[in-house]
Image (tube, rainbow, N blue to C red):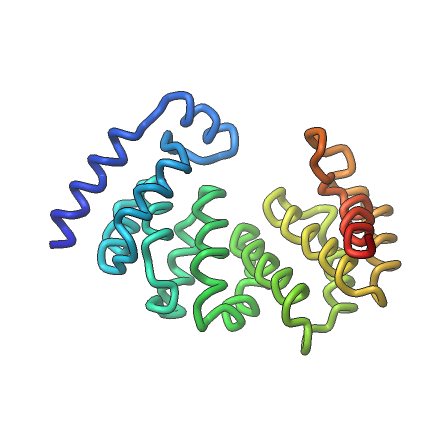
Length: 222
C-alpha cells in the first residue's frame, strides 16, 4: 500500500513544482521547487503516516524528504536510524527540519547531541550545536556553559559556515538566557566579529551575537 501511495505522492509533488520557488530555494542551497506552504498543506491532508514517511525519505528527493519529516512519528525512529538520516541530509532545509521537527521531539535527542557535537563532519557537528542551543534555553542543568564558551571562543571564527552559524546561535543563546555568562558571551562576540556584517532586512534582528543578545535581553526586560 505504501508503495502505491509513494507514487501518488511523488506525482503530487511533481505537479507542485514551481520554477520561481526552485529559484528561491536554490539560493538557500535547497534543490527543490515546491512552495513550502503548499508542501505543509499536503502534509496536513496526508496526516501522520510513518510507513509512507520512511518510503518518501528513501527516495532521496528533497521535497519528498521534507514531506516525510512533516508526516512521520518522531518517536518511531531509532538512534542509529536518525544518525544515518542526518548524515544523508545535505540540504539545509532537510537538515534543519530533521533536527527541529524529529530529533528534538524523540527520545534520542540528548544522546545524539553529545555524539554529534564533536563529530569531524561540520554539518553533523552543527546539528549537535543546534541541540545544545535548545538545552541552553530550556534545560541547562548539567551543561558546562563556561566550557561551551571556551570551545566557541577557540573554534567558531574558523569554522565552516553551517557549523559557525550553529555555534554563533549557541553563543547568543547563552548570552540571552544566562546573565552570569552574558558579559563573556558579549566579549567573545565582539572580539570574533562573526556575522557582524551579515545583511539583515529592516525589522529583523542581526545574527551578530552582541546585537542579537542585546535585543533579546531588551525585549525580556521591557
